[in-house]
Image (cartoon, rainbow, N blue to C red):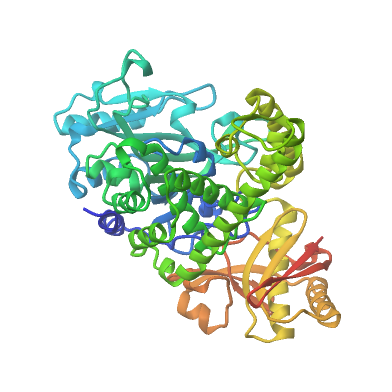
Length: 599
């Protein structure tokens, strides 16, 4: 059974149970300033988990490309990846625990062929705010008894650090208004002998390698309040996520995910183009595979390496990949890129279309990386060589401050600095890093406040202003112009569109005047649910039109604007007060970017 087979079986299973398949959202989020990448299937669905009606109804299913930067430092073991495909199904105030848990068990045992004897589960033990999840435990008890297994050996209880889910993590880290809830996780038992260095007794969350989490049913029915307490949401939600790569490992009974049929051709390509074997260099080869898989998918979404935001993460991935590749004697990344695209093209066909662009991005970054290494060596030779009367020889000890400059200015990570032959006080380096991160936290605190898609008043105003600006630009420049991207924060609106010339001052003023005119007219803003065909017939416009299926939500601003959108928006345009364009940029390839403010 291939990864594609698992996707098809999973989608079909839930479609037969009344679920509508929704599209895979962009790996780089749209209109969400709080996060750099889509990290789970629920992320684009937050408004619907909070009560907005979804165009496709109350039962949804999909496979979502996801990336989690926080896992970068864990890459190298046999079960963590930064990029993964998340199989997800949702109930938006429809079914709940008594349907979800038996369905997932049936999927695993009947559709994917896993033995019930290999499955163990965990449930929430409760805390001061939320009671013990006895309901889930009782459902699992009945399920295991029905297949002749003792539930006492199969069900374990854990606290908020293991069996609570929200995007911000444990309850104390959740900002006000964020939804979350207890979850029930399913683990696959590989039968690996327990290593007592991980504890006297083995259990599902043990790190010895015996167990692997393969699915998590979150019962999202709580919302954190400003005073730190929790209240129940107006609706009960099921938010299930199962990593495709982990499910494949279970189906193939491979405790090392990188030895499954999805990864093994990539691992083989790395071995053929380096001086290393997987047996002797598994950690480095896993890093190479993971980082270039993630890098290719991110680059295919239009991100270029840089020193900030998504571009910085892409640069970090590629450079760490290059470091390990070169250390293993590899000097040709192209065959490895080709093997990755060949493995992922069936589920991500855009990789084939974007192959040349992705390859160019990676090769240019490799060139920049090699130049960085030379610049770093030159910096150290110039500074330290004079102290010893000439050329540096052997291992050179440098100051933690200089090591941090190599990191912050030249983009070298500590391991790369050491590989160049430079040693430094790691504790002092960590202190320099902490100072730097504290300044980053202060500078970005407003941007990332909230942890979830920002629904503040200013951001909602910006969202509505974007619709007015989109229509005004088309009125002035022509209907061939359309939005290609946007990012809205409490500080400003960023709007990207296809146009190959700089807007004149007169054109900028016309856009501003048109939007302000519609604000002053105090137009009513509302949405209607309708079939996609009808929405197109009435001339509704929208970003990434091919994503929408069957019934869609169209927002109307008076008779002026009709646009596909999930919301939220103000109810009348006068609440925007005023609109001003503050900057325009050329972002290349016939694309322009406008920055504006509303309010």
